[in-house]
Amino acid sequence: MAKANKAYVLFGAPGSGKGTQAEQLVKHYGFVHVATGDLFRENLKQNTPLGQLAKGYMEKGALVPDDVTARMLKERLQRGDEAPAYLLDGFPRTLPQAQMLEEILRELGIRLAAVIFIQTSDDLIVRRLGGRLICKACQTPYHKTNRPPKKEGICDRCGGELYQRADDNPDTVRARLATFHSQTAPLIEYYKKAGLLHPVNGEISAEQTLQEISEILKKY
Ligand code: AMP
Image (cartoon, rainbow, N blue to C red; front, side, top):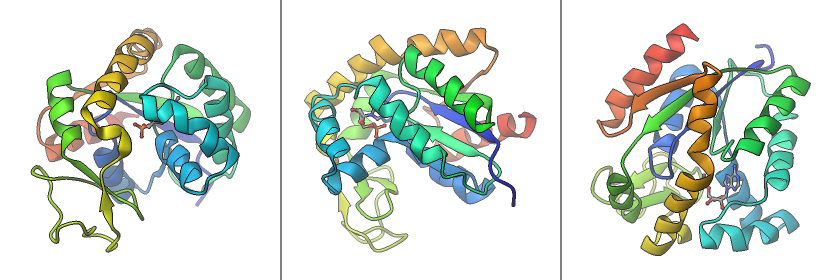
């Protein structure tokens, strides 16, 4: 297979279902999922200088500075995966990041095909993130009531241990939502103007949302 020369952005508030959709899209289409939050958490786990820098921001529900995040993303994309496309999740989150993304993609010869915007209300997000569990090993997301694992505390897929993210506590969730509305939401207008924005409903079942996304992917 050739190196990926196309990218999709999965865009939405924290808890809108980006991770859940990404998991299915990787399975169905063979995309390479690149989530900046996962990259930061990996650095945190390994206690790298990047992880140490990101930690304070993440704990507060704030954004890691744009240049640091963009550099990390560029290094990841420079690896040049063989896949039909990249699925970017959690990047861009600010207008400068959107501009940096254009530059990075241009340099690497990758085309941004579509921005898929998973629309959700804040109420739903607070409920969802309160019950979210994630596999330590493979990052598969679960939910205490909406998507419980077959065996409590254990990932169905890889047997890894499930945990609750430190930043999924109510106070940090509220801070992350505020960050989304002030810094990330302006991207909606930006990508609408660029003709790249494709909204889907994130309040229906994950299967139905996936169906809406698949319809978009057929065209782009
Ligand atoms: P996520 O897993 O996407 O919710 O990201 C978790 C945390 O990582 C965020 O709350 C930020 O602190 C940081 N982060 C992830 N992606 C970015 C980004 N594109 N820009 C700045 N900070 C980010």
